[in-house]
Length: 249
Image (cartoon, rainbow, N blue to C red):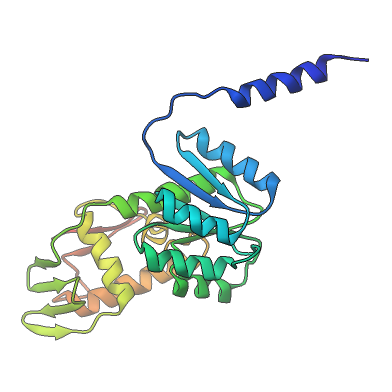
């Protein structure tokens, strides 16, 4: 018999018992009923210095959510006792600002739209890239921790009240959609910064794969038509060719 595999396995078990100091990055709650997936996710997040709580069913997940107040939740849709959809909705009713990133094999667009309606902040499809999942989780946490600006923002002839979701240009009311307000707010939080279409999709829409970069172009075109004095020659929502867009107050 070759003893090496046994010694290696024991060494791995010993390493699993070693507690390494963690930075105070907060706790991520993983609600997933597959033990193999639990192990993968636990290793992924602990390597990035997050504390981890794992639940194998929806009921336990909700109890942990109430108790530990995680900085983010990674949630499978297919769960025993309480479904992922119901759990997402309940978590968002308890703590609307806590990011919930759904992890599931379901890929239909209709499910992604439904998740948006339930309040999910992002969606990663199995099988997934660990690097992509980590990037999505960290982006969602950054969005939640971003300092809030004044509800009313003014530039040139425009006055935007993000809390009341009202807008005026030269004193005349302008009707913006909820997503146009969301996109405009991200621009006002990042003045003079060149933002690629991919960054806008990830930070504003929250889904890298849906919709397409063309959707960004269309939304910015509509914002120009509503807020720029001369939409054909914008002074605020500028195109940076080959790079993306920049907001200049």
